[in-house]
Image 1 (tube, rainbow, N blue to C red):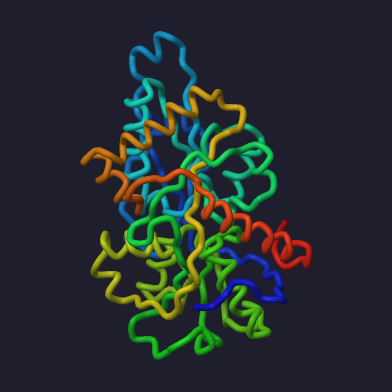
Image 2 (image 1 turned 90 degrees about the vertical axis):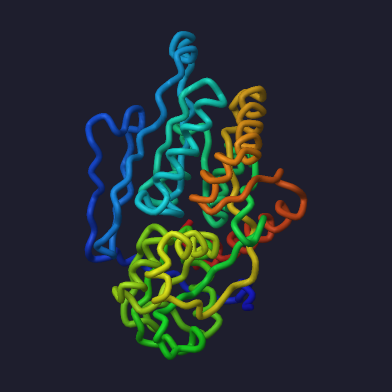
Length: 333
């Protein structure tokens, strides 16, 4: 495994993917979710899914309870994880007795921006995005999801087509490569750090680069031959393999990173303590039921743990590293 801590990093301008479409939902499908939906790109056979938030319980409507606004970074696309995320919010609605409204960001930064502006109560964010210094000022970590197969850590996988002869990243010179998001630890920062360790940049190493804006879309683009290689979240890779086994046969892992701390669920610091406690308990109770385990499995989660000292230490390490990189003008601020 390769350490992320390289001494020299060079930033790379984003290049959008060339063929995109916008998911269309019926007029009643969004409800209170008034937001930019994720742009989908790449593979042509994505299945449309409903992303309808749960109806407010009668007692919530009668007492005028405000919706709990949950922002979801597009670690999974609407097509890849929408059903699981919608089911999660519907279950939380029942447990809390108030409407829980999901909002899927168009990219990681949008969810950070909305959290920073107080436009969301809860955020499910990437570990890389969580290093944003703004979030320290306005958010607290509520729980750490335990990821399928790895627990409280995850990795970056660099993946290629199964028949690709490459044996290591160095062999991908002049290949096309898709990143996930410029704030993604596993889908951008790790592969860029690897290239910087070689004294190269994505622009000088790959023939073409693009951004997919979700890990499962990156995997699909490699599987159908749209790009030569990608960097993805290991937990999403496991979910994708289970959900799309035929496509998964077309992809293999070329390289694995060191373990990184699992992305957290964060809440606004101003959320009343009783509401934080109720939300924490709702997540924990959900993980203890058979139905809840099925819902979590669709997202790639197996349960939750408190943000303990080892997790916080790993996050602090990432923050120090990212501050260094930003000071060197290596990453977007």
